[in-house]
Length: 114
Image 1 (tube, helix red, strand yellow):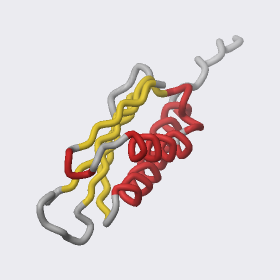
Image 2: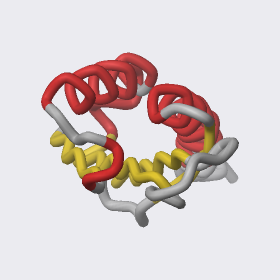
Image 3: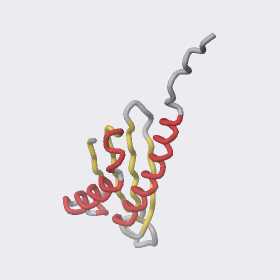
Image 4: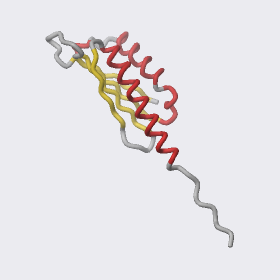
């Protein structure tokens, strides 16, 4: 699974922040790793020049193999908290997505004996 990390300049997209958030997201979504081709993580400060409550945002988009992208966005006071919340929400959505997929992936009806 390929992971791409993006941030704006107001969030200080240093290696340390990128590595820490990527590790947290990978850990939370590890059980889906074989079913995903790519994760895109975007963190930004919604009002960079002002301080505010829950103004840091994290958007994570997961790309399931052969499926449409699934994305979530969460806000929090810090980028770490926003990433944690987004990873948790995405894990729940992926669980529902793959649960539905396995529910509808049933075997063909056996031939009836006459």
